[in-house]
Image 1 (tube, rainbow, N blue to C red):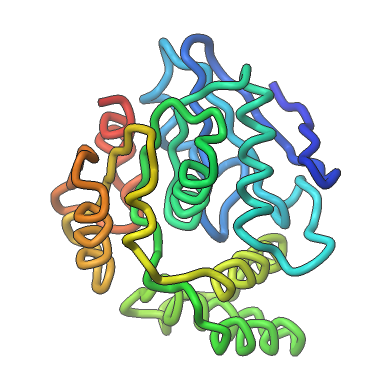
Image 2 (spheres, helix red, strand yellow):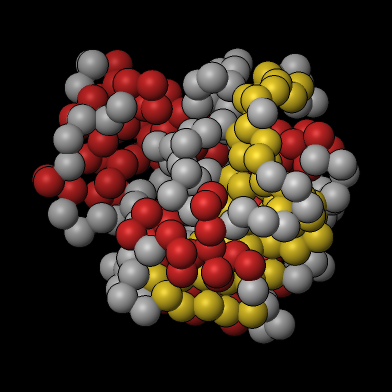
Length: 249
């Protein structure tokens, strides 16, 4: 069932709800949307009520009226958790995992447990990437924009193999870069999170993600850790059954 939820500043968020049981809110990464979790959903069915939403800037949710910050993302997640009954398990992928960390650190935001898959914490604080991506969009060069994002944010080792950014997602990616550019690379701050955390990563994901996940695990010594052998940053699509099992544990 699809519905709209209103965030604290009036931004409208498209939310899709499936199943019955304990509520689980899924937070998608950059270049995503309502369908980001489709491969995983069949393996989560049965005893979960799943809430997935398009983050602000990603259609059909509302756009950002100004440069986005992680505080905006936290407020949006809080609104979705409220729609899920005020308390829910939360799982985020990539940029969505960073949103989950911020929300859990801010006040818990009704989060029962938090599962994070490969948050790109190393990509914070880089205003140069934001400027170059914004310039590429202004020039209408969606190919250059996507390759900038892949090379300098995701650190994908073969950015030249990628095509143009999806026009419907390019604006959302820009707003994600705004929040990242204003963020800190200080991984030790996550030690202040008080909810149970599970850190999931792919055993074959390229650098610097492995070192980043090691640093996050060191900051959260009580966090559970799951490594999906042979998988990369695309594990939710290449091994959705194993990815879903990591969320369920």
